[in-house]
Image (cartoon, rainbow, N blue to C red):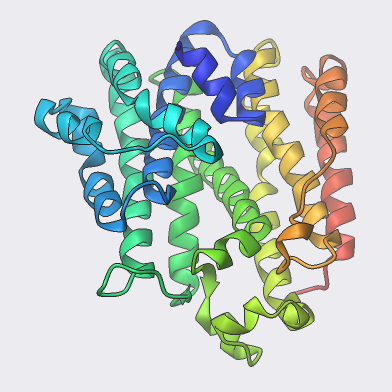
Length: 338
């Protein structure tokens, strides 16, 4: 299997963004994404015992950096039993050598940027595995201790990939404002994932929102297993949606810093931002976020419509700003004020 096919199989919307990138950027992006996605799969897959997941995630950045043969041999010796339910995950895990080889073929700067984002997400995943497991390495239903942990998690899992993307666009140049705004956009995308996946995460014992938020509204982690408590959860939901909007609001300014003739790079920024706003709206309109059957999602036709109309606005900061602000304001109107 080649990297492009692996990316297509592993990522729905990101594959579409990558598809339109310039060839050199696409190669670096694809390698970095797949390496991060493999780390995520190692951390989450039920195909591996928890102790093995912790071991390999803690050593994962070193494996990428050094291509340690002994560590890789241990990894390849993992007994991943064939299971159609996890066919995609198994395929991804088995293709780590392919991705490591592609990493070795990147230039020095691209390797450094890739290793930086791989290290950031691996650090968050290692914390995740250790925090949510008890001494017997089994999961307990827990919420994170405070706002700091939620924000730090967003910074590592979303902000670091955002910075990586900005550095890819800067191509070796320095621009702190640009990378700071990219980090904010990445954090906004990550809180979207946390909110839309809350019911799925509850099933594996994880709540990435603070216990201090829950207790403020007389809730404990186990109370979120009761779907009837959804209305009590509203104020917490609103708080973190505000957090997302406060970060994603920089997107129009971020886009202004990308030349209008770089239409593919601009589109690759526009799409995730616009689809994140669609997801925010879907979250707000969900019948019950605590019930996995109401997991928020927007229609595939929205994706196709955005792609179809992109040639008409991709070059214009003003038109994108108008589209963004219209969606942004519609969501703000649905949200109670802080």
